[in-house]
Amino acid sequence: MCGIFGCILKDGIAAPVIHSSLKRLEYRGYDSVGIATIENGKIFIKKDQGKIDEVHKILNLDDMPGSLGIGHTRWATHGAPLKINSHPHVDCKGEIVAVHNGIIENFSELKLELQNLGHVFISKTDTEVIPHLIEEIMKNNPKLAFANAVQEAIKRLEGSFALAVISSREPDKIVCARNESPLVLGISDNGIFCASDIPAFLAMTNKAVMINNGELIVLTQSGYQIKKISDGSIVDRSPETIEWTAEMAVKKGYPHFMIKEIHEQPETLRNTLRLQDHYLDLLSTFLDRATEVFLVACGTSYHACLAASYMFSKLAFLPTYPVYASEFIEQHGKSVNIDSTILAVSQSGETADTIAAVTCAQQRAATILSLTNVIGSTLTRISRVYIGTQAGPEIGVAATKTFTSQLSVLAQLALRLAKKRGKVSQDEIDTLELQLDKLPAIVDTIVSTQEEKVKEIAKKYANSKVFFFLGRGISTATAFEGRLKLMEIAYIPSIAFPAGESKHGPISLVENGFPVVFVCQKDDTHKTVIGNIMEMKARGARIISVVEEGDEDIKALSDDYVEVPKGIPGVLSPIPFAVPLQLLAYYVSLERKYNPDMPRNLAKSVTVK
Ligand code: F6R
Picture 1 (cartoon, rainbow, N blue to C red):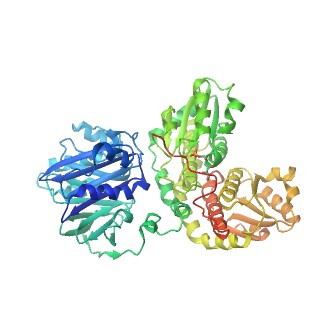
Picture 2 (picture 1 turned 180 degrees about the vertical axis):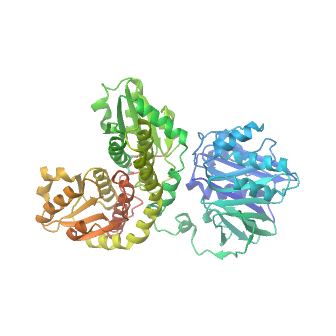
Picture 3 (picture 1 turned 180 degrees about the horizontal axis):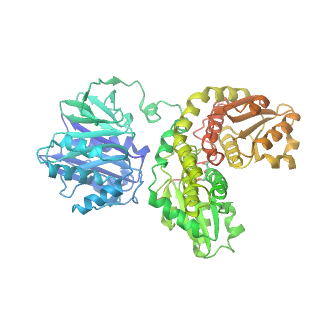
């Protein structure tokens, strides 16, 4: 998730407008910033790594000539957050300049093709292929208009993008386009804007034109023209009036970041499915060679590790040991060695316990691999290989979209390893990959069909003194995550156990009306889960279950239930099954009149640069 912005003003200098608009998009990424403007056919660029204010202090982003320009604030996905990887990116001659939000999946192939044609690349980003591709098309068709060259280039891109491109050859226009990543136009009396999100221009205008997937827009001082990328046909769309305040706009109209981020999960999951193959290959090669593998993390990320230990075992027949980072040094500090492999998982890449555990293992010559949402974080710097989880910045303190992203990446890793090790039939792998591809749509269905039901359940149980969360097999991890979410934002003491373990002590707490949440994925554990539900019911517990559609046995035993679509394989189940539990925590928190975005005593780890 990055932020892009462009503007053409009738009166005034573009750079300060771009600078202040990028500030309002900084919630979308803050690894680097860059601005390009044009005056008298000459291009000016300023860019560097770091937060906007830091870069502005050194470069003075307001001091650039021209009434037309584009800008970018970056959340690194390809290439470290360094100056050379900062947008805008240019072609060989510096005549075509692009900013981009999204992931170009086929950039490696395109880059190679263009390099073979003599193009010189400066950065490690996927974006840089865009100006070079346009340059190549214009070189081969000198009479082609700039917008048409952009259109031709876009046809070759696979993946997601919102982009804005300018050229010194036609210095009066910005060409922008959208596929999956967000893009919207703002129309004011003094100019026209394109941006990743409405807050970027809301201070200047509340007239917006929404851009759909597959559309290309030519902006000039006199207005905008929208075309379909596929056939160039003109689309007629008028501006609409946005009634949101700036604060509402940043949250896209949602009352809290947490619920916005829960709703973003179909999109973030789609992004995780765009991981570059070679990263997965590299990481799975290291895991394949490992003698012992520790999965190290804190909090929600630890729950992702716990789920991953089931995935690695079931799919790749690889034993792994999930360990709380805060316990790692005491538990394994002396025994880790050159044969040990650590796969550390951290949203922020900065959590002190995780960094301490990894540093200890590194000093003992262990191999450090990691998964993080923040490229350029401390964890990425001390890892031999890392993968970005592609969830974009998470502003709500309670982790939601980053949890499901971590799970999706870990599932892909486990599948890649399964392939390498040949332990699972190709048929089974194909089926699981297909199911993984369906998860964004499945999560979409869960959020859109079950949210009201979860609200009702939250109302009913919001005054409970304590909650139990139980699951068997991989759902133990989901149950643990459900408990953590409820405790941290609704402040209800909660207990989670593997369901089979509950009868070895915890069950003694159960009395009439005691709410027990069961996570009931449909796999080999299903029959035994029914037994556990009966045990709880016999002691007066009220059963709230997360079940598959059509799971009538469990529904019949439940006082309340939330449904997820049918046919989700057990190893992938934590991704969709976690979503109703996130919603439950959110709505119980609201019922109890708390602010779910601001859990007491907690703060999000931030990247320290
Ligand atoms: C829970 C939560 C925390 C984090 C934990 C680890 O909602 O946000 O439990 O999961 O502090 O943080 P990262 O993943 O940044 O290492």
